[in-house]
Length: 78
Image (cartoon, rainbow, N blue to C red; front, side, top):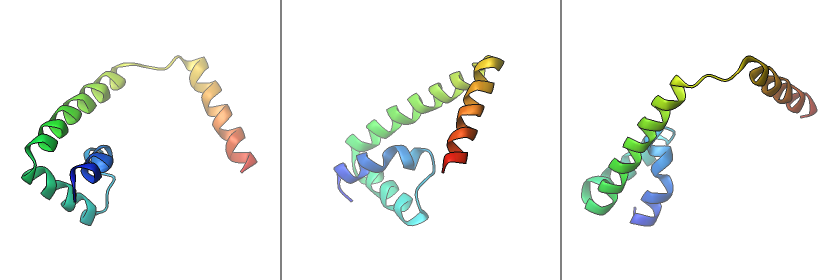
C-alpha cells in the first residue's frame, strides 16, 4: 500500500470500518511511513475530539422528530 491508498482509507481505518485484511495493510503502512503515521495520529485525535463534542450536544426534540419523519418518508419511498 502506498501513501495515497493509506490516505484514502484512513478515515475508515480510524472508524474500524475496514475489513481485517485492509486494516492490516493500512496499519502496516503506518508502521513503515512516518509521514502517514503522524497524519494518522492527528486525524485520530481530531476524530476523538469531534466524537466527544458530539456526545455532549443534544438535538432539540422538535428537530429530532422532523429528521426521523423525513428519514421514514425517504425509507418508504425506497
